[in-house]
Image: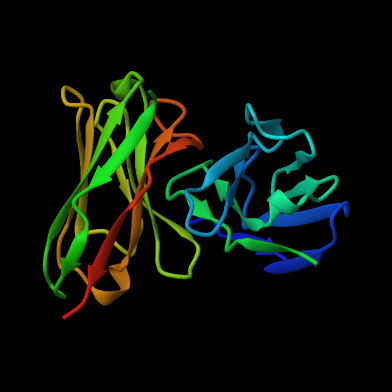
Length: 107
Length: 120
């Protein structure tokens, strides 16, 4: 099974800061990586797919990069509405696996 | 409207069984793989099982293999998860999720979830 390691597990940043979350796969997954945002009590929401493609309707301050085993999700200018937990997910092969999540807090 | 609506959750005793359903609407159900993803209280997302669009292939997490069965009825636009030999660690909100192609892919549509509580 492919393990997804996500870090940091939590981060605290100020409005306007540039924020980067990293996700590492235990083996190459090409670009078959997605990112989701989940707010407390809410359903996960797709942000990025194919590592760097922005889902329709998602603000352009979100971007993704990487291929193979190392991936990043970047928020270029953190906004109050971005307070949430972010998960990466590989769908290169079954079983599908998620990272452990990164909780982003606003200072 | 494009949506997924889960049902069937509830309180069940350890060792018991439960069947979850997910009613899909607003898209061609048979064209897409579907998954169940769960989230234990205060924990992260855990993929549980997937089924291809035709229903011909199914996949399971090791944690549920041999206990859960995923199925679908494309004539009814409904996804199912038959859960048996339930354990306390199966307690979670169960989401159904639509993939982007018939064999898999990322999840572009999620249901609101149904809570399963395994407790005596």
